[in-house]
Image (cartoon, rainbow, N blue to C red; front, side):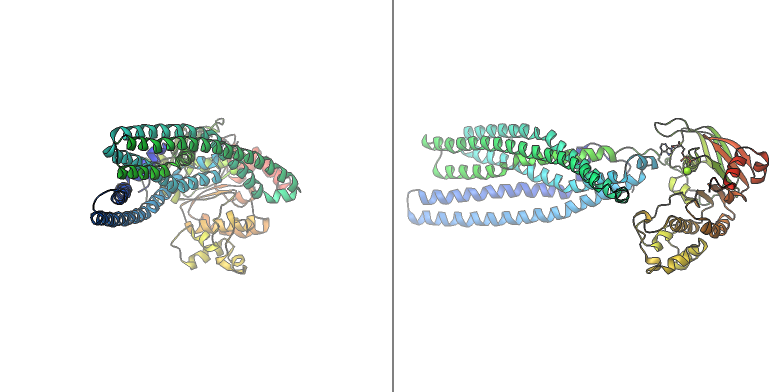
Amino acid sequence: MEIKAIPSSVWKFLWHYLSAQRVLFFSIILTIVLGEFLMRISLYFAAQIVEAISGEGDMEIRLSMAVWSAVWASTVLLLRSLVQNATVFVEARFMPNCIVRVSKDLFSYVHQHSTAFFAEEMAGNISGKVKTIIDSIYPVFYNLLWGFFSPLVAMTMTFFFIFKINICLSLLLLSLNLLLIFVIYRLSKTMVPVSEKRAKTMSEANGILVDSITNAAIVKNFSRYHFEKRYYFKYMRIAADADRAETKKFGTVFIWQNLLRAFLQVLFYLLPVWYWYIGKINVADFVLIQSLIAILNNTFSMLSMNFMQFFKLYGSLRDGLVLLSKPCDVIDRAGALKPENIAGNITFEAVKYHYKNANALFDDFNLEIKAGEKVGLVGHSGSGKSTLVRVLSRYYDIQGGKISVDGTDITQIKQESLRSHIALIPQEPGLFNRTIMENIRYGRIDASDEEVYEAARRAHIHDFINKLPKGYETKVGERGVMLSGGERQRIAIARAILKNAPVLILDEATSALDSESEKYIQDSLKELMQGKTVIAIAHRLSTLKEMDRIIVLDKGKIVESGTHRSLLAKKGIYYGFYEMQSSGFME
Ligand SMILES: Nc1ncnc2c1ncn2[C@@H]1O[C@H](COP(=O)(O)OP(=O)(O)O)[C@@H](O)[C@H]1O
Ligand SMILES: [Mg+2]
């Protein structure tokens, strides 16, 4: 089941994944409570040993009482370690489950976002935030359980144990502890802006590092190593300053916390002494109270660290969720259609479109393409050719009018289904950093090896691949950087040949090819176009000669349309382009 939305609030987000595994979660809670309880019961028996040996009366009876207390104390301790083991086992089921669920949900939700989302946000930023959230899940639950819940249980139990001995003392201790927690909370909170600044400057410095390494070729090209070094170090120094400020602040908070705890510790030592002195408690009670307070103190010693850790995790979770929980802007309607086959009739009716924060690109755009028709699209750079085919593939939703395929509004068709009927070869085809085999087979996952070879042959890339040392098993590098533009392009064409969709869109698909390889694949493209509806955006007009119709686009409007011949005869804009190319100004 695809996730419909990601909760944008941290608490809702955490609760969503907790409640998915309620039983496991409450088992953890239960084992923590039980563990803390058993711990204190064993302290009770330990105190009984002291009582037995320090008391008066028959030695034999006292000895037997001491021995039995010791036996009970250690039995209970053993039980407690079993309970602790149980906690570990339950956690070992709970945590990985959580991480798997969160990763799956984020992965599928991120992929549901529109192309615009990916255009606006850098891929590195998106994946960074997904990773931060996944990495935060474990520590945040751990922190909540052991940093907050466990001390809370410890405090409550200490209160009840001491309450049984002396009500006044227990109430006093409880209120002082609550006060301590509150002060530590307030102190820790002053760390938040300092920590945020450190995180921000660190991530900025990291951004500079990544940008610089990504563009290592340019750095070399301009001999700018020293410039880059200074540039990066400047940011690194700012980050280091922020880091220093954070450590200093942390030191101050830590000292204050320890001073307060030390002060309370003195009180907690002296008060029981006073109560013993006035005869309100006996030796066993005294020992029990002292040991209860000692282990509680131990639990509290990390409290400020826990608070700070939590604020930090909370901050990065919130930061990630703000971006990732954004609603998707291109969505499937409920009950969207999934047409099995389409003929390929395409109509644009009164289409209005503008990119976010940009002027109108299409305003009342109309075009009808019949099934099987081959249309060439020509126009200056920036005239909207690529945008036209992107809105047809529903990478973006138009703001007005209607685009239909075989008479059905494309917003009524499931995006996945719509795009399965369209093969789009963009100008810069992306390849995965996987083998060539896997990249071509992406067009049709169940294609046999032989079918992949055939597609590669038709794209005139088979021989090239075979000459590589690893042949089809060659990995192509990130985005295909280990191949030349033309090789990449031909692999993308082979991939589209394999997809064999009824609508074929070529967005300057041959522009990266030299004239030689272009001549080769012209034939395969011609074959690929057979019986398909084709929209071919071309930079080199010679490739469009045999189109049924050529449309000249300018600023989102059709300014000329006709066959190659008729447009030449007309001596208009197309003729101008053509003249310029054949006289050699444009390649
Ligand atoms: N993702 C985008 N966001 C904002 N504006 C864009 C985006 N893509 C293209 N544009 C702008 O839209 C106009 C048309 O672009 P495009 O369709 O790519 O032109 P063509 O393919 O004809 O060269 C250009 O002015 C371009 O700057
Ligand atoms: Mg373009």
